[in-house]
Image 1 (cartoon, rainbow, N blue to C red):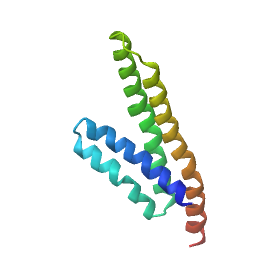
Image 2 (cartoon, rainbow, N blue to C red; image 1 turned 30 degrees about the vertical axis):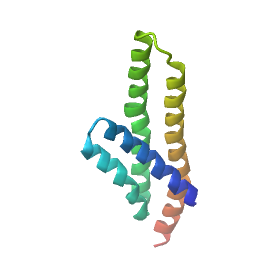
Image 3 (cartoon, rainbow, N blue to C red; image 1 turned 135 degrees about the horizontal axis):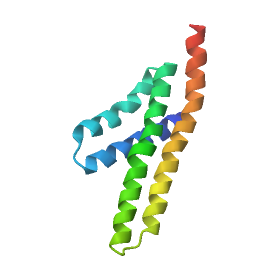
Image 4 (cartoon, rainbow, N blue to C red; image 1 turned 90 degrees about the horizontal axis):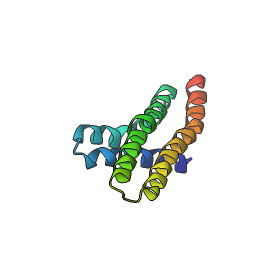
Length: 114
């Protein structure tokens, strides 16, 4: 179970580091602290964190990858390694979403018993 939580934390910290690169401190803080929602252990909070990671793959990582790859191609620079790295980051984030399913199931069963 600890590795699932670690995976989610790292995914959010990667997202936070992305915004830190652009000096967007509000988003950096929000995404760095978002994994604290796992302490609440409510099924809706877990689903919210999953949704944020899914949306971040589409809105943040894919647009960043496309923009950076287009810039590299237009400058005649190598772009394949960048595409592999960005694809890995997107797969890592989606893996964190998948790993949160077990946390959600446990929170759901605990919440239903109470």
